[in-house]
Length: 411
Image (cartoon, helix red, strand yellow):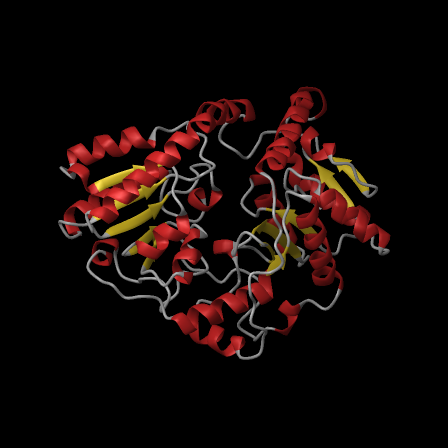
């Protein structure tokens, strides 16, 4: 086991696998990783990054590792490990947040998101769906933002001791935890007011019967932006979308830009949008909201612009015309608009509903586990599903020849 989420999930999964007779070795890269204790063999990597490859090679040999689990395949430590694992033909399984939230998590062989080996052939999904169950929304996981915040704070408070125990560790995130906490501390008390303002803005759009496009923002620190898109950050994506909207969208249309609910507030998107709207002479045709009920917005919007957010899957579920500007598993012909962003504003083609349901059932069947990382109920469900997936015949092995479990994406 390499780095997991900042919760007890990996530690509890390790103990469960041990109880079932498996050998488990967990690598701790920082004090936060070591906070969640396990009965499994634990080793500390407290050396410079350039020694990681040799350290991992020795670990694989010493313990006879025959499979590797990790959370997030874009973290630098994990990307380096994956290169070595592929060279040695050692299977690895990647955990991530679920493609279909809130009651699912991702466990996928060979990579997730744009590194997924899932084919880009719509016909493949239609064929696969004939032989698998129809999935609903899974058992309700529930969760508490307070509990999640508490685990995250405990993880990062433990990392205060990194200078002594893990002096070479560098987080994969762009800002130190205390900087992010300061941003959240400033933003969160304002959320009720911002929610009321968002509802008012939406009500105004509805009252004037103005057609609107929804552009839900992703986190600027998200590796889906850094690795799986052409953008260097969210501000650049906002600029491109607004410029295209100004030149190509109908004069009565509105671009509704929705902030991510977990944004730290360290980047002033509102000011950036206001400045750009003035330069592009957009007036009140661009509206920025920091709140709003996403299903309601999706139900009423004319179309959705995303980079590669899982909100894109929600948009397809609601039957909204959608364009994905980055690499994503759902950017398929028949689901997402395949032409340019400039052309998107002039079309109203909805996703193929039969294809979406086939896609959803297939992706859940092959990559999703009912469960979560952030509360007891979710972790229990996720561990039960993980044990079934990891210790029994893996359903991925039954795939068609063109599904290899390794990345097949181009570009």
